[in-house]
Image (cartoon, rainbow, N blue to C red; front, side):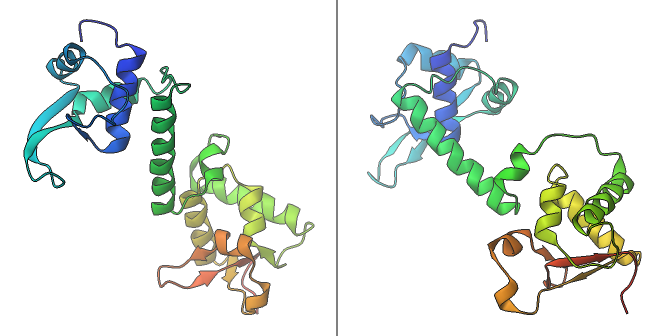
Length: 215
């Protein structure tokens, strides 16, 4: 674009993003921008207008969507002002949080995974060492003691869940750990269900014994 994008224009682009597009004739779509501004955004390749059949009216109408350049612009300015104090900004934030929830649910991540401190992890070996260190803290320094995965996950919450799961499976495959399920349903609480490790065969694992195969 030949001009720096304004906060109201960025908010308009975000609304298109979180709404998966909008009909040009939709008077409820906020924020409102002048036709000249919308045309400028279209000319800059940030938005696209296509003719589609509106399922509600049965008529062909103009439908607005965010173009690839628009997605790139938003991705490069995630810290930009959204004017969330406005009704339109509040609605964008609400819809954005719904998108975030869907993203976390699909990837079996918790909100804690998103906000966990970012630490440098030097390969799976470092993850395994951190797992062992956390296990010993939880077990009082003893090996082959039952530790709940829910407690272990909290102790190493900065390790992304996929990396931690891979390290746990590797430890078991190498004979350094044993993973089991809790057989008594009364022992399985909400934290255990949240922290469950599911094997490729779909079996649940709730506890870990570290220190070699148990007899």
